[in-house]
Structures are given as C-alpha cells and as structure tokens.
Length: 548
Image (cartoon, rainbow, N blue to C red; front, side):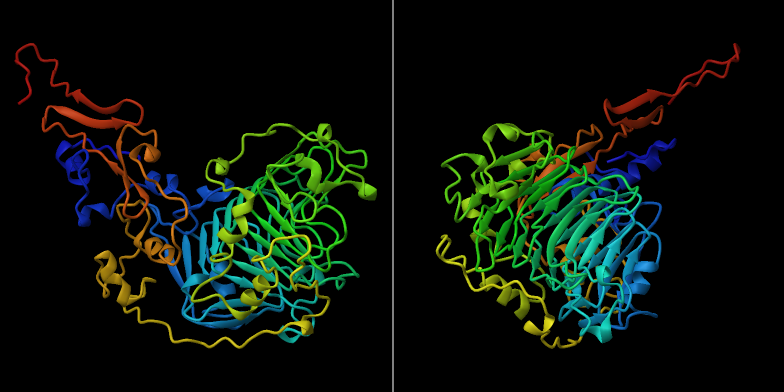
C-alpha cells in the first residue's frame, strides 16, 4: 500500500493503524489506492489479465454503481447505457431475461466491472456481441448466445458481429472474462482479435457455434490473432475453459500472437481441429489440456499445427491428452496429439522442448490433464443463480464419465439455431436495496454496513471494496493464500497477512508515527518508516533552539 504522508504528525497517526493491528472499521474505509491495484481482479483470478481492477474505486474517484433495470436494447437503465458511461463503474442487474440486440455493444470507456452473477434470474445477450475496445475490464457471470437471423428479430445485420464476445482494437489491456457462457455464435463464440495484451479467459463455456452460416464459414470456438494493420495480441491466458461441439478453433492462435498460454482446458467433438496454430512469430504454450473425440471429429489428432513453411519452434506442448491419440499424458511423446497438413505427424524436434516464454505463473497451480474434466465441469460457465438448461445439456453431451476413444458422447456441431432452443427466463424480483449501493439490504449486515447508507464503495480489510466482496461471494475461491509469505507485496510500508478463513491477503498500512512531535514521519516503500528530526534552527544567534 502507498503510505500517504502528512506534515503534521498527529494527522498522520489518525489514518494509520499500529503495525500488525487491524484498522478500526471507520478508518479502514480509506485504504489506499495501491492496495486496490495490487490485489487480483477477484480472489482466485489467474493469468495475464488477473491484475485488472475494473470498476473498483480509488481514493480520488469513488466510482459509481450502475443498475441495469431494463432488458431493452438501448435507453435508460439498459446494459448499453451502463457500458457507455465513463469512470470507474460496476454494473449490477436488477432484471433477468434476454437482452436482444440489433447492433453490438461496444465497451469504449475503461474501468468497468460487469457483474452478470448479480441478476436474480440470469442474463443472456442475443442478436449481437459485446466487443471490448477499452482497458481494465472485468466481466463475470454473463451468457452470450447471439443466435442466427431467426433470433432477436433478426439481430445484427452483420453476420460476423454475431459473435459471443470479442476483445481488442488499437490497444486493449488488462481484461478478464470469467465464469461466462458463450454459445450459438455465427462466427466465433469468443475472440481476441486485433491488438490486446494481458487478458485472461477462465472458467468459461464455448459451445455449439453455428457452422456454415457466415459466407459458408463460421462455427468456431475462440480465435486469437489480427488482421489489417493492427499489431498482434500478446499475453493471453486461456485457463480452465470448456469447448464443446465447435467446428474448429478451440482455440486457434495465429498472426504472430505472442505469449499465449492454453492451460487446463477441456475440448470435445471438434470437427476439423481442436487446438490450432499458424504463422511464424506466433508463440504458445499448450499444457495439460484434455481433448475427447466426438461423432463429428475427424479421424486425426486433435491438435493441428499449420506448419506449411512456418516454424514450430515457438510451440511448447506438455502433458496434453487426446482420447484417441494420446490417452495417457505420461506415455508417448508430446507431439502425438498433433498433426500437420495432410494428417502428417509432427516430429518431436519440430517443437520446443522447453517453455519459450516466462508465462503468467499459472503453471504453479495447474492440475494434471487427467483431472481436468472432473475438476471443471461442476463449476464452469455462468452458474448463478444456477446453471441454465442450455449449459446443462451441452456439458452432458460430452459424457465425461466415459473418457475413451470408443465413446463419442452425443454432441453435435449445429448449422441452425432451430436445432436447439432458448428456454424462458423468469424475470425474478430483485432483492431490496434501500440505499442503492449495489448490495442488497439482506447482505449489508454481513459486512457490518448500514442498509440505509450508500457505503459499498468503501474498502474492506481485504483490499477489495465491500461491493466487490459481495459480487465475488457468488464464487468459491479456487486459488487462495494459505501462508503470510504468499501475501508479501514487497512494500515495507505494509504488514502482510493471509486471512486463512477467507483465503484473501490483507496488506495493511503500518503506523510510522513515533509519538515525537519533533520528527516528521513518513514511509518509504523500500526502507520502511522514516522519522526525520525537525530542524528548529531559526538562524538567530541570540536564541537557543530546541524542540519539545
């Protein structure tokens, strides 16, 4: 935490607790901005995008809570209106149902958190996509199911805009999508296309993209690359996602995209390819993923490396499973689950035999590929207020109880949204929120807050605001601290403690006041407390100068 130094020692001591002592609640509200920026986007956030703070307030800007109260495409109270606002903002939902779009919703202003998990009955966006063109964005708990021209009154007239969501433009940084569901897109269910950096896509479902619709193309999982004059994306983490019955691109990394990590994902019933790679200069780690063949899968290895003159020396493969070509990650070579043009094999010497970039650090907490299906399926996707019937059905088609080459499950690549169905979503009454601060009255007492005072923007001891504590409470922490050493923020002006009850690090500003009015007290983040003697010399030889 950054220590705010004051010239008056007494004022300094008001804002800083004794070293190792928890701040009193009424003082704890004014934790510093650095504390808020050094904690993860939410407990358990991982990968390159985990540093996003989204709509989190700062000391200088308390931010706003914007409530979505209308399912309309545009106008007051809509998601489009909330996204168009500026400044740190957290979007919560008081409605449930389908938001039908005729054009994409573009996130053009940075510093936003969209908390789809707060919808009392669930939110689904249809007809077009959400496109992130700004930085510092957190999106959780949303369902993106754009559909074809028979949905949402025809929806977006541009076929390629009927994606689930997209990230990237001239430069987009610090974005994380977590626990979202993206299905029935006409092109890609998701993409990082054009320039972006420090992105995480985690715990999401990408399923049943609609094949052969956009210029007889489409039906893809997730695309990473660029076109036109935009620089290629970099530092993208795809962690713990499920790809089911997408024709191809599960994901596809190309166009010189660099430092891409694809770790602990599950893929089923890809058609032409599951993971795919192309183009010189592209660098990727594909580690501990699990791929199962389905009825639509071609009779070849899941991974497709488009060599065709391109070097594969920046591709690192480790610990991946393919039910038909490498059923045991401890056996055989790493390239056995891959093929090249003409179904030719990939020689071990063609790919890197060690990581080719440092990575985000997620490998320290990843699991073995054999454990991926059982670990992901219980909680992946948009699961609040509960997993909907669409995701339940899509996940069930993979039949992860039988993970063999002979069992193909019962999934299918679709070419028409009429092959599936949008179930009704009940518009559930939202809980009362008298002060309008985004935390329901019934939850305010959990945090010791006043339901009649808008105080959710204040900081808790964890470094998150109380609003964040509430919206994060919808998900269990899969990656939590267990020791104080894990919480060291390399700042000599904080005491660093792991709250083992919550798994959250608490970095509390220390008190540098020495109780001596003859010193100025400050803190250096490297050296710690600095207590400097006040100079009382008035340059008058006729006075004796001292400090009491």
